[in-house]
Amino acid sequence: MEGSRWGRSARLVALVQRLLDHPGRLFSLQELGEETGAAKSTLSEDMDVVEEVLEAEGRGRLERLPGAAGGVRYRPHLSPARMAEALAALTRLVGDPARIVPGGFVYLTDLVFSPEWGAVIGSVFATEFAGRGVEAVVTVETRGIPIGLMTARALGVPLVTVRRNVRLPEGPTLGVDYVSDTTKRVETMTLPRRALADGTAVLVIDDFTKGGGTLRGVVSLMAECRANVLGMGVFMETEVPVAKAVEGVFSLLRLGKVDEEAGTIEVYPSPSVLRLERAEPRGV
Amino acid sequence: MEGSRWGRSARLVALVQRLLDHPGRLFSLQELGEETGAAKSTLSEDMDVVEEVLEAEGRGRLERLPGAAGGVRYRPHLSPARMAEALAALTRLVGDPARIVPGGFVYLTDLVFSPEWGAVIGSVFATEFAGRGVEAVVTVETRGIPIGLMTARALGVPLVTVRRNVRLPEGPTLGVDYVSDTTKRVETMTLPRRALADGTAVLVIDDFTKGGGTLRGVVSLMAECRANVLGMGVFMETEVPVAKAVEGVFSLLRLGKVDEEAGTIEVYPSPSVLRLERAEPRGV
Image (spheres, each protein chain N blue to C red):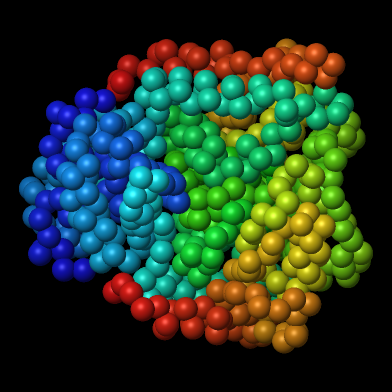
């Protein structure tokens, strides 16, 4: 690329592509200058424009770190208005009676495996857990993986997946037993010993919780790994039981009664996410 | 947003964010005009800039569809030079002797669950399978999911995950038996009946194949679902056995001998991907 030939418009396109393709990655102005052929003062003016537009759009933010070790970084981050839009859309989607599965369950598979909705859900978690120093996202196979991946992508950190069924050798592992909410049986979850370094600050993400048994299992496993759990987030939790096996779980949606005969699903945004939607000080 | 107040620079930032946040989604010029307050002719000039820069950068392309039903669409797409860079980096990463696991296996877990590398691998698959009319990506739990998700994201289509261990009711399912390469036993893979509509054109993506038994299982299951398999892609295949249970699998890397005592891993870009790297007619 011969960046120096480019005018401001072309340079902005190139800069925005770099930033958005790598959420959470810090780009130094020197690096960006070498790649686009622009002076630091010029780039600084470019970043004023990028920052202003991103802020007004309400889907992400530009972080600008001054000094020799500084630079710029893009972070997905929803404004209160975008947050309200996202929650309204997800609530509508989950509440569709066509999702009722015999036995009073709700079919969520298409939603939790969707790249588009995964990105939205990941942005909600990234907004809630911004600025807390998350170093890795931890999830549990299978249905937690896509949401966990998109959250890790939004935060610019790796994803670590706790296994319940390991098929390939991964070297020495750490394991804990837990009681599954679903099967009511004692099961084992494991992680390769090399997956997490001692003291890693982690965010635990899963798609769904009822009693919190799986999350409690993950918390125990994190203690074995000497990881530091900064927070827990799930896409949807059930209204009952009110007392979960773990406390302080942030959820997007809360599931009430699923009435197979009437064909109705009670679902609404969680109090935890509404707090976020209202309290946000910046953005539109 | 009061788009009409914005100059060209600000508008380009807003347009690029929209396009890159939704790979594969078609935006009509009318829709973009309403959101940015710009006339169609102005937007058309903006798109000339976006197209030129993306082409020069070699990581994605702008598709422009003329007419009333037309618009613009962003697609991740690697130029031959970016493809070569990506394959060199992945080969180096996989060939690191620290990845050898007792038993002569290669630890790939961190890599296949990485959002950053997942995006790179997804871009390679999106480049290979561009323009073939893929309507859904199909993968197999567990380790295929992150790569499958990032490929689906790059192609702008849903991800459908074949299950080997279902824990939650998902309604009626279709299932096939297959012989697992890993366990050498007959196992069952299933898919909820509602996951794929009849006649859907699918791309099958997995992280790893040795004998091709799992892929053959997925192909049988796709036949049961009346889906049309357009292609198959894996991140890495083994050199032996040369004859796999399925033919025509596109792979990024090929794994040769893993020598535990000498501490060496033989790995190299696959002939299939090298063909792609060389034959690409456009871009730098």
